[in-house]
Length: 179
Image (cartoon, rainbow, N blue to C red; front, side, top):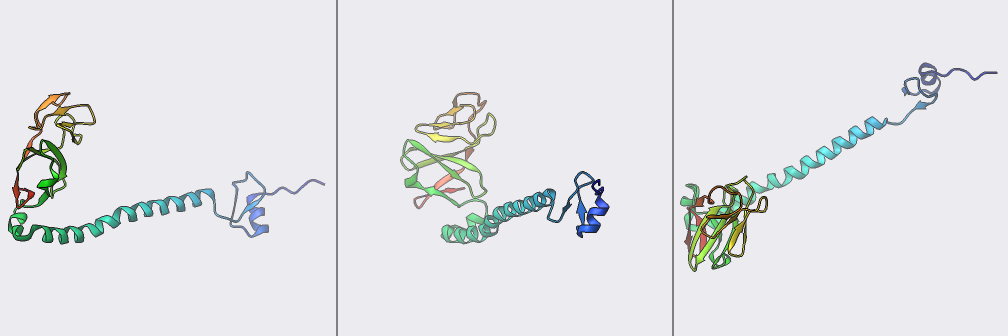
């Protein structure tokens, strides 16, 4: 005797399953589909990324507000006018060298103490293609295309077309601050 023909309709009807392969197999499927499992997995992964990215941002304003008030001391008025934020301790900037720092606005800069007690600053954004430069001994070097700047910000080698733009800073009470 020949086996009975099994279709979606007969499989679903006899097994109580809610779906079956689109006529390509003879058994009912009762668990989640591969597509459903992947969709749930992708949703959970996306939610995890959002939570991970969102958590530091939620905490950052409270930390920034607390540290800005504590660090500004008597210079709070100048801090609100766009200056006065401490960038580094003077002792952290090597004499005859440079130190990477970040402004209160989040812009990368280079602090240079060519002679003791005098600090100048330059944008740390390479004038060639916008990469962030870094101090390397008595030079400032771009890791992307090899541009080299001296401690005055002047481009001395590589494809950078112009010097690093200056950034106004001054030394107050042993701190290098934005002006």
